[in-house]
Amino acid sequence: MRYAILSDIHGNLEALGAVLADAAGRTDGVLCLGDVVGYGADPTACVDLVADRAEKVVGGNHEWAVTGRLALGWFNRWARAAAEWTSDRLDSDHQAWLSALPLSSEVADATLVHASPARPDEWDYLLVAEDGWDAFSAFATRVCFVGHSHRPAAWSLGSSGPGWDPRPATITLEAGRRYIVNVGSVGQPRDGDPRASYAVWDVDAGQVAIRRVAYDIATARRKIQAAGLPRVLGDRLGAGT
Image 1 (tube, rainbow, N blue to C red):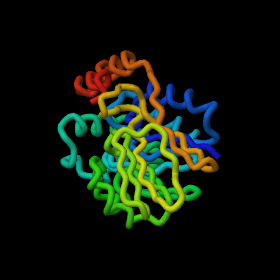
Image 2 (cartoon, rainbow, N blue to C red):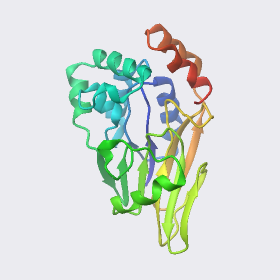
Image 3 (cartoon, rainbow, N blue to C red):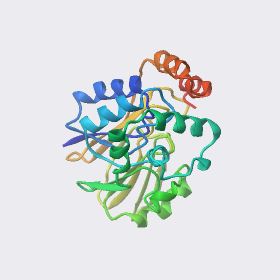
């Protein structure tokens, strides 16, 4: 079984479409780690696609924001404006679907969560090596897939000591080690690479590959501006920041 693992789509339909097309011949199923909405101009279309294609979806902080479960004061002014804009455009069915998403789920020997598996409703970021070590005690599976930071990374623990890779490509899941893998962001990468990021998890082979996919950034940016969303949300797509 091979899964495409997506996170932080953020209403970017162009990026989501490109990632799903890239994954179509490589994977057997789709999993999503949340933040389907927020920032981008196509929240309902992205929700519809994810709801149709993903076997498991967990909720992120932007799902909580647009459904009234997280105070908007938690966000900076651009994210707050995007959350308000998005909430106004979601009908009752979309709101209900987003509200029902769990904070964590399990598939095979992996835990799915948006932010840290430790206190997932506090939305802690795993950014540097030290951020990951304490989180291993919060899940029982061999692997935990996360998003939230918009930056791919991998942590591991085993008898030979800890490991951390801030720019992983292919991760081989070694016997006797456990892993936390950040799959990056589909719709708003922040690692300096503007291409959409997602992971392919080959369960049988014990490998996770981070893939980067080019998409129509100009159209996504133009739609953000036409919608009246903060200009910076479109401008940052081209820089991957």
